[in-house]
Amino acid sequence: MRKERFEAFTDAVLAIILTILVLDIKLPSNSGSFSSLVEVVPKFIAYVVTFIFIATIWVNHHFLFSQVSKINNKILWVNILALFWTSLLPATTAWLGDHIMSPTPAVLYSLNVLLFNVTMLTLRSLVINENKLTKHIGLSTHEFISLIINTATLVIAFWYPPFSFIGLSIDLIIWISLQFFHQDSRNTVH
Image 1 (cartoon, rainbow, N blue to C red):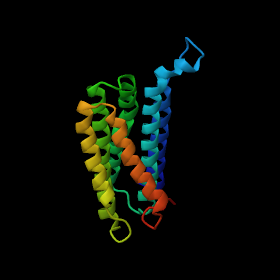
Image 2 (spheres, rainbow, N blue to C red):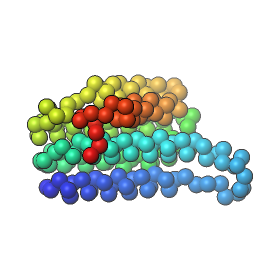
Image 3 (cartoon, helix red, strand yellow):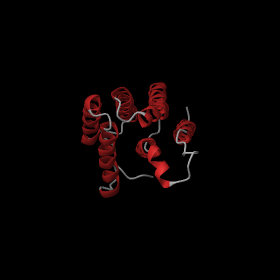
Image 4 (cartoon, rainbow, N blue to C red):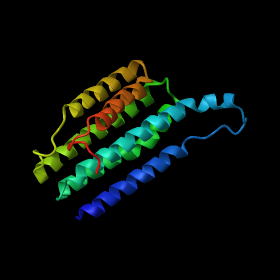
């Protein structure tokens, strides 16, 4: 498969997912006051955190595949699995946004994020091995720290459901900070 087609497909799916994500936010129709917006705050926070997560997915995916010359069937199917987990985010985000203090939606959302990250780590390993990129791009310590954060978030969400967003936010702050403050050839967006 041509790399351009592969990237265009991924970009299109992510754009659709971002569009679906925002459709769940319904502004209050019974009142035009600022106080009526309070009921929307958990859904809006859920939207913002998940939007930033998907944006980070796109940036990291773009960087990873900007250095790739070969897309084989293994890479294609693992990428499709990563998109599958990403496509579930609007549903798990909406459920958690509606029930921010309930453990089941929080655990499902956190599991969704963890399964995506495990799949993305697998994809990254495949890309590195298939394209012999170990000199130019390697698995970072933060990717493993990220998995630890995701796993801890999943466990903590059983007892304190809002931690689903707190844990993911911590992870995102680390990822974005690394990209902003430690610009080098490994994490420069092309």
